[in-house]
Structure formats: structure tokens, C-alpha cells
Image 1 (cartoon, one colour):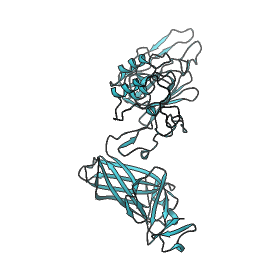
Image 2 (cartoon, rainbow, N blue to C red):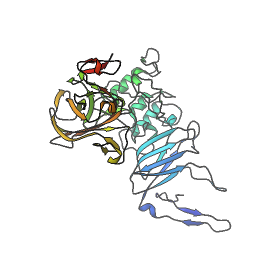
Image 3 (cartoon, rainbow, N blue to C red):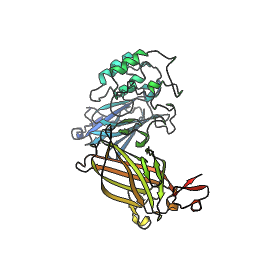
Image 4 (cartoon, helix red, strand yellow):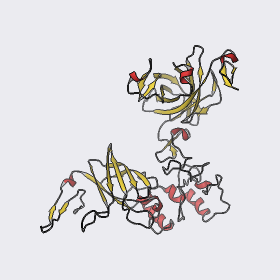
Length: 440
């Protein structure tokens, strides 16, 4: 129990037929702590049976909300965590009875935080509606340091108030999934977006819903996808980003599954943009888990031609490019787990790794630089590599300012275009076209 509310636990001891004894803990002056008040889902205020997991650094602690486990006594419903010297809790995971979960990040120590289930987020006065009264509460929390009493406005669990999602749920008693309300596409949710929202206040019929998922296009979380489909149950619709390659160049995939503007340089890996051995066509971005065609050379050496696009670098800058290719299906502990002439890198066998190569970028305009036709030589046979999943790791650093760096890891499945002199050199069902076998 906390008699003095100074961050540590004190002990009040009562034995039958003996005087009450009080033991005061003075450690609170030296260490930090945090308290959590878990709100139940639906009409229940107390989340009896809920679990709270708190991570600081690599250490986890867990508490369960228990109403009572003693004779003629009751446990305190507010849960206490000792944090030692940690000023911030890196991760807080809440599991409610029934299976609902939320994950929150970067909450400050020495505070009492209220943890709300998703069905009560945005409802600041807890009256079951999200309306102008809630916006008044929101306004007091927005654009100021995140503090207790504002937790119901943090929809993403990011330790910040989410204006976009509140606007997307404006006036709704049972809100749909969160709405990104940047209606004018200027990268900010502000007065102009609010004016558009008010202009459509109460409109139901005639509002465009291209996907037919019941969410108007202006309020789509993931445009072009059904916002109600969440196969992995992580609270983010399937159409949102899972990997960096799901976002446009200049954007990154945040941990909550949304593409946001990158705060620094950004890198994209693709193929094409010219004629490079068996690769001939316009530039196409590679997707995580997608397919990559590589070329079998004249002497059986595999040629992998990739093209790079990046933001955050000076036009036509000279850069150092470091790249590796690892075999995703061949994990390793050391080089003895790999074939000859392969090394063990980041837990996977690597047949190709090259230190920095100095190359000039080409300015493509609009803050984008390009490097087309970048060659990897992989010393594996076509039979060994065809159909394998590989990990492409690429890092690009400005030669004069190494702090300007962009990197990307990308998993793709390889298809080998085999070298040929005629159809007889190709596998069944393929024909020889311009020196390479192609499917008929």
C-alpha cells in the first residue's frame, strides 16, 4: 500500500490479537515508479482480471487487477510498478478479460495513468457519445506535453493526442476504425479540415464510399481497402502498412501501421529503368515478400540488377553504397553453418557482401535522386538460387556527411532467368528470347 503516495510501497501489518504495525519505505526518494488505473470495457468501470505488462529497456514486469485475495480485505485496484532509475516506460501492454489488448509507448514515470479500452477512447466525459463536449476536453490536451487525464484521446497508444482520429469519429456514438482526417491533403489536420468536416456534418446519403466498407472515402484509414478487415488482429486494417515498402518514397511505416512522412533520408529498391541484361523495362518498386527476377550470366554467375531511388540527399550527391544478399531459408550461428565461400551475417548465410562503393546519384527532381542498374554478382548456381527467398540489405551514405544515411532490408523470392543460345537450352515450357529463357 502507498500511505504517503511518494512512489514506493509501505507495509501495514495486522495480525490477530496483535497491535497494528506500520513499516514506512523511504526508497521513493531514490527511485521512480508508475501507477495504472485500468478501466473496464462496456458498462464495467473496474477491469477485474486485466493484466498489465510494463517494459523498461529489456526488463518486463506484470501485474493483474485482483479485487480481493485476503480474508476480510481487498486488493487496491490501482496497480503499482517500481521502475528503478527509468524515466520512461518503453512499452505498456494491457490485456482485458475477453481478449482485447492495447499497446502504449513512451509513458513517463512518476505518474498515475488511466488505461482505457478502445470502446471508450475519445469519450472524455464518459457519456457514451463523442461530441462537442469531448472536443473541449480534447482541446485542453492537444499540442501540450502528454499528461494524465488525456489518455482517452491517445488512440494509437503513442503517448500523444491524436487529432486526426478524434475528428474522424466526431459525433459518432459507436465509431468506425480510426479516421485520418487530412481532407485537403496538406499533411496537417487543421482548421481547413475541420471546416470540411462541419460542412458535411450529418450527411449520410450521397457520401462516396468507393470500397463499400461503410467508411466514407474521406475517412478511410487505408484507401482502397476494407477498413474492417484485420486478419492478424493487431488493430490495424490489412490495407495499412506492415513493411516499409508498403509506403511511398519519403514515407516510413510507423509501428501503429500507418505511413507517415520520413524525418530523414529514405530509400527505395526496385528494378528496371533501363536495359540491364535480362531486365528491360520501366522502373518498378520491389515489395517486401514480392518477386525478383535475376539473370544467369554467360559463365553461370548470377547477376542481380537493382535500381535505387532516395530522398534526403543533395542533388547528384556522391554516395557510398554498402550491400549484401543473405539467404532467408539458411539461418546460421557462424560460418561453419554455411557453404564454402559464404559467411554468416546477421544470423543468415550470405553469399554476397560488399563494402562501400563510391557512386554518383542522378537528380530526378522533386527532391528525389536515382541510381539505376546497380549490379550484384552472386556466386550460386541458377538451380540453387531459383525459388529461394533472399534478404537484400542496402545502405546509402553521403560521402561528405555520413550522418546522411538511408538503409533498407527487403525480403524477396528469386526467379532466375536462364541464359540461352536457343530454345533447346531452356526448361520445358520456356522459349529463348534475346538470350534468356522466358515462359511461353
